[in-house]
Image (cartoon, rainbow, N blue to C red; front, side):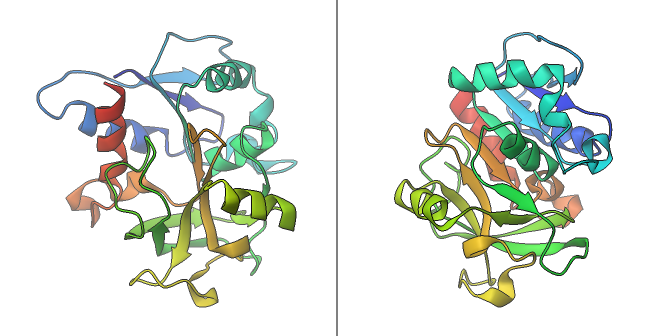
Length: 234
């Protein structure tokens, strides 16, 4: 499998994602290496997966992800996404995907107007995708969040469409998978922590699976996402 990690001024999780991908790509003795692609590039070699990592692209000026969505490289990301190349956006990457029009809705300031950095639990809403095939539907995961603008918003018609089409990927939950308001760290509508596009080839999520993808980091609940992508796309 070949993967590209897009790097913007202010990205700070590009190395974390690269390490997590490399770990899964090299399972079994492979020597594949993710490619880091600078935001000013208008083209890059063919890949099987594109990742937009977390961070604070362009300092989150204007709106989180708004400037990054207009970087030269994003025209190529949008073009390839339109051809079915899987795209994963994590945290700031999720914000960029909504600003670029690859995912519906918007990420607004957290309901408490505070930056939140802690482990949370999220429930897998569908295992029938290239991103979640190593999980079980309904499985609760412990994964860190670190964001100031993670409050997912869409109007009621948009939220209903996400529900009807099965586009909700993850929801904030209690450790046992129960959904309630106390498990929601940022005020996101319907406890949404991540969504797919209509074809489920683009995923945006606020939690950071790369930060719990290796036991020395304190857990491995994020590892199956990367293992599953490598298995499906190799």
